Length: 258
Image (cartoon, rainbow, N blue to C red; front, side, top):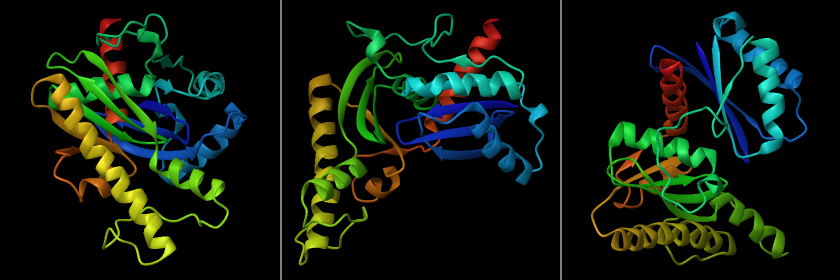
C-alpha cells in the first residue's frame, strides 16, 4: 500500500491507497513541533483500529506547504515504514505539468497536485476552487498546463479574524442562512460570511472565465466545497479526494518511470 501525506496549514491528511482506490484516510492538526515518533504513536493506533500492519505500507509520497513538517514526516517514513518518501517539488520528482509562470517555484505543492488530479480526472480548461485555509482559484488549460490563479483568505480564517478584531462580535459557525438580511448579530455575521464568499466565488469565476476567453469547467474541493456548491450553479464538480488522487498519480508516474 501507498501512504500519501498532504501537509496543509491547518491539517495534515494521511491516506492509504491500494489498487487505485483509497482504503483509509485520517487527518491531524498541523503542528510545527510534532516529531516523527509522535506522528507514529497517533498513526499506529489508527492502523490498529483497521487491523492493518505497518509492513503493508511499501511506499510514501509527501506534499507540504509547511516546510517545518517535512523533515519529521520524511523521518516517519524512513524509520517506521522503511522507505524514502517522494516529495512533491524536490528535484527528480516529475510532475508532468507545465507551469506557465515567471517563477514556477512560487506555486504551492498542493495547488500543482490538484491541477494534475483535476486534468487527469476531468480534463480542461478548468477553474479549481479549493476551500482551505486560503480560498484559492487555480487555472489549467486543455492540455493541463498551469496558468496561475487567485489567493484569498479562507472562510474560517476570515471568521476568526473578525471575532479577534472586533471585541463585541462573536465567532460563528459557517452555515447557509435562510435569508440574506440578518435579524440578529449572529445571523448578520453568518450572512456576510456565507453570501459574501458565495458572491466572491461567483464573481471570480465570471471574471476568470471572461479573461481566459472561453468556457471553463469549475471544480471545488476542500472542507466547505459541498456547502457552497449547494447554493450556486457555478460549481459543476465537487471532489473531496482531489489532492489525494493527485499524489497517487504523481507517485505512480514516477515509480513507473523508474
